[in-house]
Amino acid sequence: MTRARPRVAVVGAGPSGLYTASALAASDTAVDVDVLDRLPAPYGLVRYGVAPDHMKMKSVIRVLARPFGPGDVRFLGGVEVGTGPGRVPLPVLRAHYTAVVHASGCALDRRLGIPGEALQNSLGSGAMVGWYCGHPDHGTPPRLDVSGVAVVGAGNVALDVARVLARTVDELVSTDVPFTVLDALRSSAVRDVHVLIRRGPQQVKFTPVELRQLGDLADAEVVVHDDGLLEAGISDDVTDRRERANMTALTEWACSRPVPAARRIHLRFLRSPVRILGESHVTGIVVERNVLTPDGRVRGTGEEETLDVGLVVRAVGYTAEPIPGLPFDDATGTVPNVAGRVIGADGAPVAGEYVTGWIRRGPTGVIGTNKHDAVEVAASVLADLATLPPPARPEPDDLTRVLAERGVRPVDWTAWLRLDAEEIRLGQARGAERIKVAELREMLAAVHGAAAAVDLGR
Ligand SMILES: Cc1cc2nc3c(=O)[nH]c(=O)nc-3n(C[C@H](O)[C@H](O)[C@H](O)COP(=O)(O)OP(=O)(O)OC[C@H]3O[C@@H](n4cnc5c(N)ncnc54)[C@H](O)[C@@H]3O)c2cc1C
Image 1 (cartoon, rainbow, N blue to C red):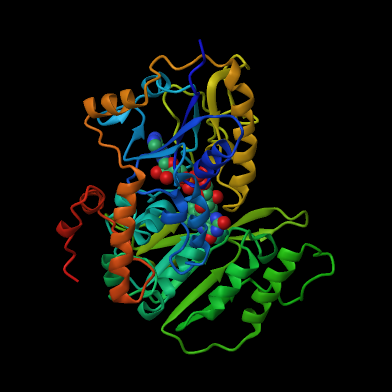
Image 2: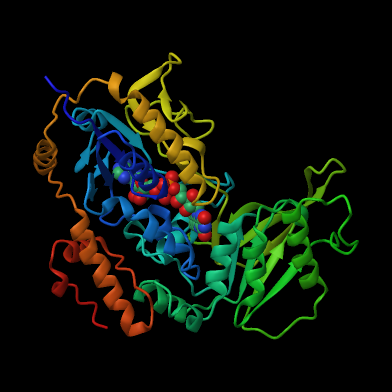
């Protein structure tokens, strides 16, 4: 008897899942691949994380979409793996596939662990970025009737948030931000965005191109608060190119005269948030001044100051949500693995379970980093396929039946393309490549062929 074609489920249609699907489909081994995502739209953080004013970066979706041409890869959007109503538990999924590759990313914001963090208008960057990128989970807008905002973090996500808040509406009109987001930004009262950076100018994780971009905004000024650290010039000991480039840009701003602008982005070095003030919502933030010790570490001085802010966004990293039924390392926020093979508590690989992307290695690296990762994980899957038992329920249509029983109607690639076309159509009126449909109800109306019902009244 001939063995049926192996079937692989990839959970998550972000870059890591799609690069994995692509590598599996391109192999000489005949394998059927289903890519599942909890959302009706693919592309993960390329769609819902990459800043709207970085539209060029998003052109990578042309590469990511490749596996869905005619061939062996199916998209099953709107299918969430997990426990609870409308979700598909992992054991149920496992019964239909020879192997499962988890590529579900790191969706949870890390916390600061300071008092006041739970106040209204204190958010993680996931919620803030999700809102302006039109993620259906984050439809509630932050209150922007405030003049001061604190963004906590020393990485590119902190810069993204500061930049989007400081841009004029004219600068954002040709991006893909939803209409509701553009309206909220149009009436924004924000004037001062304070980026709170725990360490000094040499230690930031910004990439120089992103940092320099702050200086190119139409009506915003960059103000550097460095406690005199940059005055001494850049030491010859700083040999790292990224560090030198960042320090050069910062020194130029630190030495330049103030320019009149509607908004200011304050880069406040050596400042750590201590507590967020307010009764029900944010009214301020107390920060402690730090100093750098001779060995480059940070020490708090106990000296505090209060910044007048009404919105706090923490951009201090992400962690993955544990997947019920799969091992999880709480310390790293990732799934333990070797070459993508999930490792159980006994130290042995869990047969047929793999991880890739952020959930495998944590929230680091650029989109392309996920490709290297995916190629390695796909190689592990392909090497193991012959030894893995066939799925208990090998018929592809069987899964559709099981999903229907759970009230789940998967969005296939053709259906997603209807939403894609709708977004492109909406964009034409605003001179944008596309405008995101952000509400789940409207997304589903578009994918299930009721595009005419999606009347946004514009
Ligand atoms: C704010 C921000 C901006 C960024 N900007 C850039 C940039 O400009 N350039 C760059 O190179 N990189 C950027 N990155 C990094 C880049 O986005 C990541 O490297 C990449 O998206 C990680 O890919 P991933 O597939 O592991 O995770 P994700 O992109 O997060 O994809 C995970 C997918 O899994 C789905 N999913 C989650 N849980 C489930 C479940 N239970 N069932 C089914 N599906 C599920 C999600 O809906 C999502 O589609 C940015 C990251 C962030 C957070």
